[in-house]
Image 1 (cartoon, rainbow, N blue to C red):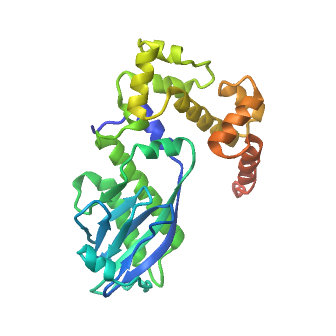
Image 2 (image 1 turned 90 degrees about the vertical axis):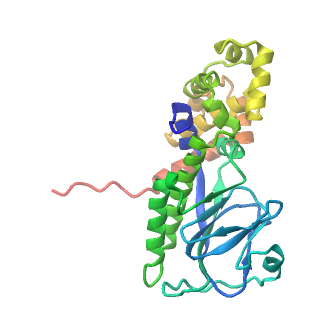
Image 3 (image 1 turned 180 degrees about the vertical axis):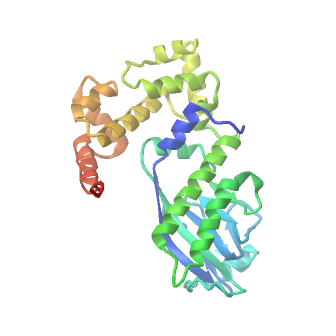
Amino acid sequence: MNSSSPPIDWLLDSLELDASLFHIGRYCGGWHASVHGLARASFHLVVQGDCWLHLEGHPPARQLNLGDAVFLLRDLNYRLSSDESVEGAQRQPSMTMQALNRDANDGVGLVCGFFHFQSGLSSLILEALPDWIILRADDPSSRAARSLFELILQECERLPAPSSALLERLSHLLFLYVLRHQVMTNSDLGGLVALARHPTFAPLLMQLIEHPELPWTLESMAASINLSRSAFFKRFNEMTGQSPGQVLLVLRMRHACQLFKANKTVEQVSLAVGYQSISAFTRAFSKTIGQQPGAYRKLQEGQLNNLPATPQPMA
């Protein structure tokens, strides 16, 4: 599948994540490195040399060369190492990174960081994706991602040192391109991605997205695609791993967040996403987003107030 669709585009646009770097540097000699156990999604971009990726339970080791990248979307038991064998990698010491050296002809240069996915809809999208994704430098289907990686490589050669802030933003964009490629081409993905691809269920998904204020019930959702209540619930659950009510809740709360960013009041947002009771909306929002609606709204107001003023045209 190479074409996109409105529900697929909406899901990708709704994915909220932040990237942060924790290492930019070089390992040489015998070494191993891992951030397993920190309950974080991580990424490792090879900007010089090569190394080996070991994933517990998924042999053999995978060689990562210059221009390759690995994105670990779960807290997997893994290690990067100079050694191809599992036993050799386990014996290698955990080393301190050295500064990148553009003239070095040994070792490996890495840009490493974490991804943080926002709760709610992002978590549902993430559940549909593989545990890890490897981007290969010689993959002809990833030209856009390759262009971003070239910018990362160029920044790593910047003297006297690369910009961490710029590398974070480029890594973020690179990951979004990789995810889009996965969603467009990996036919094995389930969850909301499978729902958005399905010719019968995709129109319903768009209706839920565009009209969260309607009094949706299991019966009305089933009727909209000409299925019985029981058949609809079974097929929906098998496809997404979630109940229709759970998905509707997350879609409504995603829309609520967008409205708060547009400076709408709690009462306005509550009605706009289908709640006649502010208290019921507050419970649903707090459970899904992890914050009270009022606190979330104030946070968005504070971020807007901290934006730089729009420059005025010169006289």
